Length: 55
Image (cartoon, rainbow, N blue to C red; front, side, top):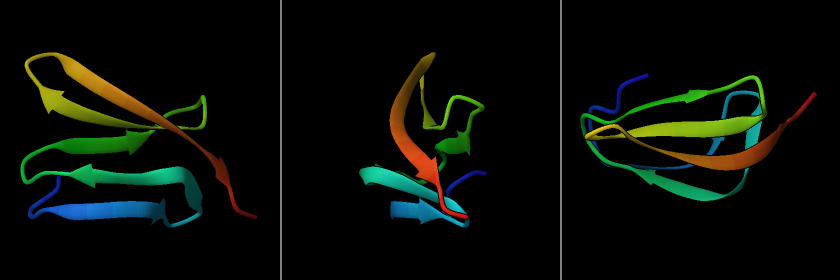
C-alpha cells in the first residue's frame, strides 16, 4: 500500500506489529512472508519491523 498521508501503524488488518511504525506520505509498505512489515523509505532503503499474525 502507498501512504497518502502521515500514518502511525500498530496493526494492519490481521497483522500486529511489535512496535508502532511511522509511515510518511508517498512511502510504500507491505507485510512480507517472514512476518515483517516492510516500508520502502526511498533511495533503495527498506526498513523492517517484526510482528505476528492475529488469528
